Structure formats: structure tokens, C-alpha cells
Length: 160
Image (cartoon, rainbow, N blue to C red; front, side, top):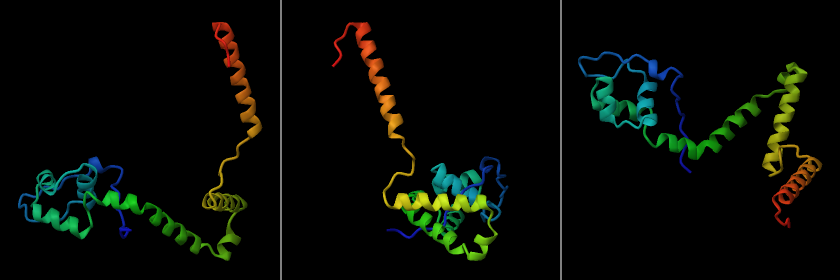
């Protein structure tokens, strides 16, 4: 499995980020890396299109993309490693829970944590995480079957 890399996400206001004026076209300094990442990974621009859009040299865009692991495959890499990334984040959170922190937590927080971990254990054991009332489902099925019989009678169709 490929190594997971930190993924920087564009800020919510990516479309309002200013594009710095760069008359010398020598450097891409001052251009937010989030903007370059957005153009390459989200918009699908190639380095030439990014350089033209941001008015800088292609070599600078290429260098900055390599420095920050920006590429069209970064999103696919993240998606393929998402479970591992989430697992490592969960492990970090779990390892940060100390007896002192648990003692300081409110009953509401403790109940929420207990529920969360209960759900995770059930998922890991391939068990349902939702309460299903089979009695309610059976009642609904019987009601639908009754409606189906009534519709068949009204239409003059033989119901099986």
C-alpha cells in the first residue's frame, strides 16, 4: 500500500484568494500553496495552465508542486490510504486519553465517548450499529401486503 502523505485542503474561500501580481515571472513566492494545490488537484490544471493563470514560470510551479507533494494522483493516494490515515488519527486520539482527562470529563462527554467506542467495537465485529425493531418491520410489511391485496381487489387482479 502506498505511503499516506499529509493532504492540505484548500481553505473555504479558495476562489477569493488573491492572485499575486508577478511581473518578473521569476518566482512563485507569495502564491498560496493551497491555490496551486486547488488548481492542480481539484481543477485538474497542468503546470503550464497553473503558471499562466498565476503569471509565473512553469519551473517554479513544478518545483513547488514537488516540494509539497502536489499532483493529480494525490487525491487518489489519499483515498486509497484513507482507512489507514483515519486509523492512525483514531490511535492518536485514543492514546491521548488519560485517566486524568477521563476524570475531568463531564458525564455527557463520557457517555458520548462510551457510545462512540461501543459503535466502533460493533463495526469491527461486523455487527449492526443501528437498532432495528423487527416487530415494527413485520407490522409495516403486513400493512403493505394488505394495501397490495386491496389494490389488487380494486383493479380486479388476482393477488398471489
